Amino acid sequence: MDAKTVEAMVSDAIDGATVSVEGSGANYDITVVSDIFADLRAVRRQQTVYATINEAIASGSIHAVNIRTFTADEWEAQSA
Image (cartoon, rainbow, N blue to C red):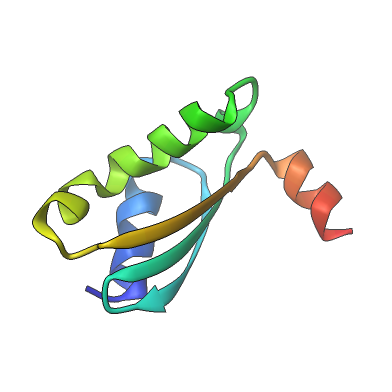
């Protein structure tokens, strides 16, 4: 599996999200910016992203992930 494939998996599952994936092999850093995260606690945000890649984790194609989630406003604020 490669980063572009992981990015497509997340992007396809979360409409309107901006997704960035870095890494290779079975280890990836995933950043997702979407307003679906508004009013969700950190754990629920993580679960939302994990659900999009769960099959790849179960098959062993993805072994380790670091997930960062933001709403558009949060992303803008942390980028400033």
